[in-house]
Length: 396
Image (tube, rainbow, N blue to C red):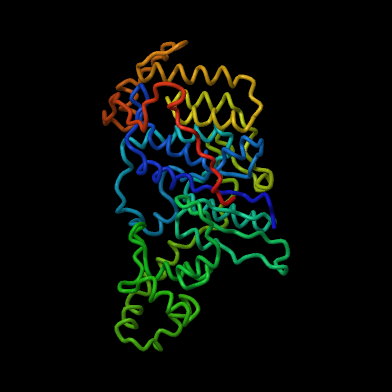
């Protein structure tokens, strides 16, 4: 099997996960950055060891493009019940894209499609090319892409599996069968019958995942159920399925992943250029640019994660000539920021996050104000700076 798998990150989903897992945090100019910090923590947990080992992993951040998708055209109520994006998260989307660029990670999105569809297309293309694929996401819809473990008869086809972003544990085909009691290629039929309240997929009333799996195992597929619906013994279940056939088939369309998104529609947000199918085999992170990462941390006022980054770099003997200078500036910045001074401390540059900028960022709602950050610690000297994690529990 490939020792160099392609890692596809469901970036949009993780942004919301990072936002809700972090306390409200703002930079010195009032810009909210809590989700940005959570996202950077995730990147470091996944990648920091490999970056400092001077590796260039195959990795792509996949985002939802702004605007409706083809599913909204099919069913206008698709995801219609979801609340608006939190007003203090809106300006952080662009900052998270900046974080990806600072780390040197390729990014892609496709207008009219969800990130799941782009991931499905890239995963299918990559496995056909013989690459193994890992998908970092907790989205059950993406479990449809998981393939059985490799065998000698696969003819060079890659294997697709998922990584749970919270537990950092691998989700393979056996895990899908254990959770859903069907194979991954039958999961779409189960999801169509059971529906999905989170996405406003209607499903069939009264049919949950367990009953749906029983029906699929007995009749093979959604089509098989309706071809034999008269044979279903339970009268109420039979009648419900018959009365809601159109709804079930609509749901099947909504949960199906588009696995053939045109590569010409896949855009790199950084330069608005289209992706080429042939470049998938060579898409990788760029070499670690320490100055670029540190500059981003400085722009965000991320003192703790910067210290972690520098400490980890020092312990790994990464060749960076300006390490001592960067460490001294980091300690001085922390000392100055927390107001206890220190040798060599210097004033931090002031930035203004104007009312007009805030208003434009959130559509006229003047929500932001410079507030005190919530911090986990208040270091008084170098000894108080926490040691970095070792990031050794990542399964890829």
